Image (cartoon, rainbow, N blue to C red; front, side, top):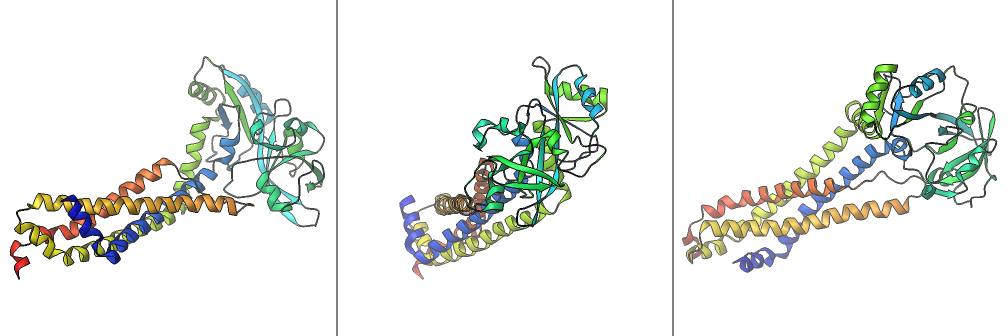
Length: 383
């Protein structure tokens, strides 16, 4: 009977491909838009993920997300170092500066100032494209991210020390290039020492953005955060906590979730409409075949199983086409767009959620047409 169900499904090629197209389009739209949404949310935390070597982020209590910088004083660094359970703590500057290019144009830059002695927070060896991270100790030296170089200098080959920028009337010599995670703001990223960073920005009374700290091996990071909170009054978060704090801010305070949610919901309803209508018409045109099966003694339960098999086959094929198209979209655009790749992140959770939505679509489509089969009289085949 399963073979008969499949023959009935593929008998009318136009309607068969129409159902598959409806489900596939819905899966494509839901998976692709969800991946872009996840990519945007992930980009908001790029600096948190790129900073290596530290367990804890210490900041002003009113900081809401990673770009909401409220500077600390130098004395606050020593207060954090004095908390029991803190193995070490170092400075980190994070901010924006306006760079003047050789042609006279200006460009906003993200500036990360690393601790002079340890360079904690610098890209790891695997992320260094050109140069050595120790070159940051040279006078006026900066590293630029790979996408920033392409955006500013196009296809020019990288030569250490050839290109310079001007920030706050100070010269910045590009001595190295590194790979960085795409940021939400897509500005070029400059790495330099902390003492160099404070010269690249207008003078302020406080310039310490964050304190990066490491917990003692025998003390849980969460306990050290609690001690810092109690003893200093600052907010201390682990990498994971700061990651999700930033994500929650963008979810609650921006229109991004609503806008993408509307698009994903539109894909779901379009899939339901196309698949439901086409599947219903397919069933109506095959009522005589279902009536013949009833006349031969096939029960309603077996007919329901046949319809669900047809829906399952359509769902699996449409789901494969949809998620495959979404993955292909991300693969192609990440390689075509070189200066600022589109935000696209395709975790396994999207596959599961999209699969669940496709199951609902094909189930609803089957239920719409199933009632006509269940109330069908076997004698219809003789009319």
